[in-house]
Amino acid sequence: MKSKIKKLENTLIFCMKTVLYLLIFVTFYWTYARKNFQLLNISRTTMVVIATYIIMSYMFLSIYGRYDIGKRKSKPIVYSLVLTAIFTDVFAMLSLSIMNTNENNNKVFQLERPWLLVPIIAVQVVFILIFVYGGNKLYFMIYDPEQCLIITSSRQSLSEIARGVFKYKLQYEVKKACDYRVDKLRDYILQSDTVFIYDVPIKERTEIVEFCYQNMKNVYFNPDMHDVLERTSKHYILDDVSMFGNYSKGLTLEQRFIKRVMDIALSVIALVITSPLALIAAIAIKAEDKGSVIFKQNRATRDGLIFSVYKFRTMREDVDNYSYVENDDRVTKVGKVLRKYRIDEIPQFVNVLKGEMSVVGPRPEMLANIFNYTSELPEFEYRLRVKAGITGYAQIAGKYNTSPRDKLILDLMYIEEYSFWLDIKLLFQTFMVLFKKDSTEGFHEISEGMEYEDYVGQEQ
Image (tube, rainbow, N blue to C red):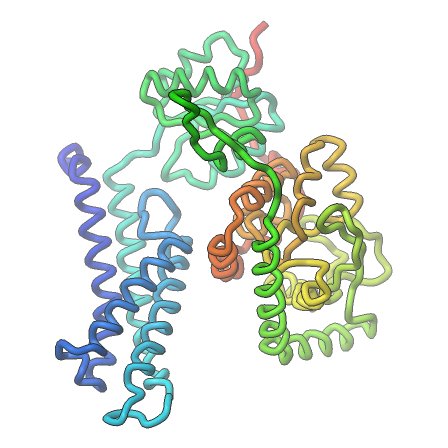
């Protein structure tokens, strides 16, 4: 029975996805059609609202992620679809409001019953919860976890990759972990469904990937510097010779201008909107220990220029200054709340207005961290090719304690793939950070309390 269902996997998921998307759309459209009867007929308003809903849905699904059960955990999928539904509903409601501004409806522009969005979104959330949790439960009833092999170069590297893989126990079952230099490596690969390669030299990694491809094994590997360059290169044909070309010149003058205009506009809007929240935060900080409200610290931005970053103070003033760690007792009670919801970073919009930072860009690291990271990873300085940012690829996809190498790769991918659309995507994806409990997770020993009994070291 399971084997027959597996053959229909793509069809089954497609049907579930289609039904869910239709239910989300019908919930919005039917609710507003009850008060706007022109939506029940073929009209310009009908076509515009439907087109807006489809376009906005597609755009936000590409930003947040689709109904990919079996690939992601249920909560991230729920968050993605809920945010997509909320933004799509708002834009569709705005388009309806614009279309209803005419002689037959509203003489002047006004929002079309915005309070209806509350019950609409509530019903949509129910549908999303049912389809996501039900879909994932059904998927993992049918599919067993993939039998996995982890290939690394050391126990420390194993600790780093295991932290990620072990969080997906329904998808992956790690049967063995080994050093890439063991004699029986190919036998271990043949006994596995999926292979994870982490922190393995490029030459050896390439050989392992080719062997996995030859034997039709799923393979994942962490990217290196040359992978980022290859990913962002363009294909050229010189006469009849295929070549990849990469032009590393940083942002163009036009891109810098557009980015600066967007930074100024977003910073002004953000400071105005968050001013009540900032005032409450300032009062709470002052009331707790009578100390200073704003914390200043030297950070590095584009071309290594040093500037003072502004934050709401979240730690006691009489403590040593070093990176946040797990269960840090230096953090105040108010500071815990500010850090959890990223409220402490609101003053950085002033840095953006001053031109020291951008809204989107690599995280402005402490100078001590830059020195330490660069001594181990000289290419870490490439992050300074653009201005530091409040949010960015590494801040969204990574965590506070993400390894320097992984931060570097994420930041380099942003720099090399920069576009106005990428900045827009990352701005909207920043909302997802609010739902990540571990996004502000401090540094700690990941392998603590974990056993690697199946780890096979280098065989001499």
